[in-house]
Image (cartoon, rainbow over all chains, first blue to last red; front, top):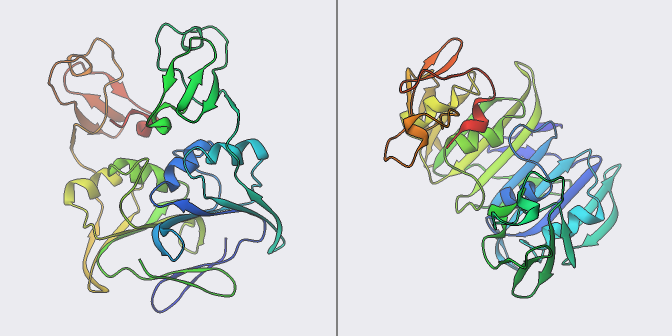
Length: 155
Length: 155
């Protein structure tokens, strides 16, 4: 990524190819990254700003990921924690595609069931499956309901 | 945090008060944040850039944290994963203090002992204690040695 020092700060250049996630609920950028599998060491070139002033939202977070185009499934996961997020796929400095986030109907292999007796919590080779309801996430194996702090249950 | 849209990107403004961590080993920014207790939801205004080109280091990461001045103990933890990091404490837009990172001799309550039989791994109210050696981290309770992937053991 090209960066340029200005007298007053750091100018994060536009990305040539990749994804810009804007209008993330203020403070949720690191959780959004977790939702798309970015934790710890990152080989991607990321630019992140959290809790910046937004006319529309009060505060918002912004994430730019170079050289990675998010897939539909990844985009929809973001809806769970940042329902107002807007996603722009960038190719050759231009917006190639705009994607809104839609709350997915089901989550497969994204969230771990907190029920220790659930078959998806055991060492069996079974991916977790949750139905997304207005009141929370319902495990399709054991009916356990996750109603809060979804991010702490991400696989 | 003030931000200003430019034609080509997002200008992350300088911070008025807070901490700038520069020269972080490329790709380690999110691990540095974990080391100082920033994971998941963040109330801080952060600006993060990962894997930016650096004359000195090839690639590096940069983290700016508004309205938080890192303490000596926090700074030294960063040395474990980013030994070349430089830390500037900013007050009223000026560099108030520069801090180099020094590898600490001991880590108390920072890393969890991977030995399930270690007394610090049980429900006893005992903080983990590790000695920092050239070959890794040695648990002062059970002598277990952590030689790689220190960040995955952070409490």
